[in-house]
Amino acid sequence: MKYNKSLSAVVAVSLVQGSLGQTWCGKNYMSNQSVVPPGGQFTFPPHSSEPLLSFSCVHVFRPYLEEDGKNAAFIVDTPIVYESVTGAEPILLPSGSSSSANLGSLDVTISVGSVSTTATVPLNTTGVQIPIDISGLVAQKDAYNVSCSATYSTASTSEPQTFNTSTLLLYLPNTNASVTKTDLRTGALWVRPADGKGGAFAPFIPQGFYVNFETYLATNLSMVDQLKADGFNTIHPIPPYDNLTMFEQFINKTISDGMYIVYDMRSNYQNLTAVAQQVTTYASIPNLLNWETAHEPDGNSDPQDAAGDAYDTIYEMDGYHPVSIVLNCQDYNFSPYVVGADIVIHDAYPIGINATWSPVWNTSCTPDFGHCGCDNCKGTVDDVRDRVQTFKDRLNVLGYGRTKSVWTTPQAFGSAQYWNKTPSGQEWAALGFTSLNHGAMGSKSFQYPTTTGNVTTIEGTATNVTVLIKEVIQPFVVDPTVTHATYIYQGVDAGLWYNGTAYLLLVSNVLNETVYVPWEKVGLGWITNETTQVQRKFSVSLFNNITGLDMSPDGVGIYIVTP
Image (cartoon, rainbow, N blue to C red; front, side):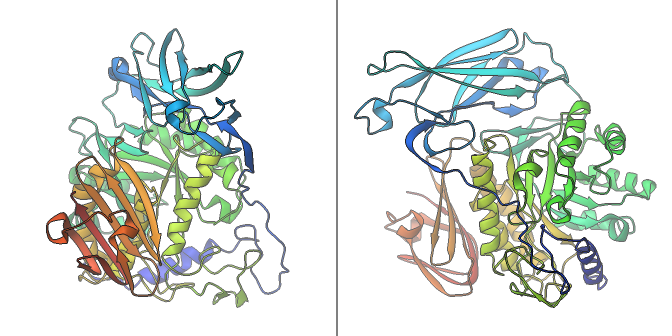
């Protein structure tokens, strides 16, 4: 792959054009403007001195198809919390109870139309699956209302305590067209093969690139082949798609290559007539992964209900594919915008910025003023870790922890207005690994093509990493029975998954310092024989020794560890 020298100019123009509104992320940013606090900040709930029950009840898959009716199930969560998260209610616990073992259980009833089921669920647990046969219901486009109730009785209370919650269930007619399911146990997508030839649903972690359609794809469909060869499975063409003849050829090319596509409505998602026309035209293509509507609505201060209106329009017509939005701001009107999405994507680009002074506007950047290319960032990989984790935390607070997932957009460009360098291959890998560690379930880098394909750059690194994500990482990440923990030690970010047989360890050094990491600091202090227990699958600037890991700046690694 040869580097296209016009890329940096295209990136510069497109990103700066997106910054020419009156404000960005609610902030003034030009030298002739005054400092006005933007508002719109997310407020985390206050601490509660009394225990609260955060009772949640959602279906395992969205959507269910008619063929799934006898095998449907719901997930029930009953954690005790001490923050006033959405939907949490006070619960009177037995006096002297100090562990989940002696808290007792809840009698849970789930009702969907004429169908209901009951089960006993331990208190202060998550991920309890309750099977339910919904095959007696009529598969339809309209969602079913679901009511869930829980009764809690203890010897110390005179009357049972009752808790209620509700959700919507999509139970859709079977179709030979494309369907993308979401596993609400993990946030992972499940898809059929993208070639349209049929096959079973299987879990899927999107790994792809944004690619400008008019500039690149409409003139060079071989880019689809190159992305496939580099190990990617998803392409997100950036609109407009004005050349409909070439757009159809592009779709056919991706189908023949077995690549999924994201259909982007950013240019007209506020026009509900246009949204409906696009859904009618493209909902049935066999490799449609999901719809994307609002692109950086928070940066542009789009109407706060616009993404939600587009979301409702799409689900009235389709329902077989999830909807994503992209948020650019670190903290500006998060809550109203995410109403319009199943998938919330961040696009923080921290590599090569000046985090405190804008080279475009010649002004400072603070939480209340300025535009430095990455909102409220420090200029390290750690910005992406913080963005993914913060988005996850906010969704949990809002009661969306099961129903909305987070994806990441690793930076794959530089030499543009705000950015003085393109990330190296290992920096790009660190952005992705850190995102996976903190719960991102998909990745679409911005944008392709990037740089020459040698081993030190993004494309060279990708040929190794994308295969390992599919073959090594994905089986752990999509498994609802796997346990997961994160660790941060002196700038090293680590994710640890355990499937009952082996551990998956992802590590990335997010700061520009050399760090030694003892095994115990990443949850593996029991390792006694590094030679036989630790299997290195991939690493850059990272070296094993008997007692831990030596990590150079931006070092990354994938390990399988067996007890």
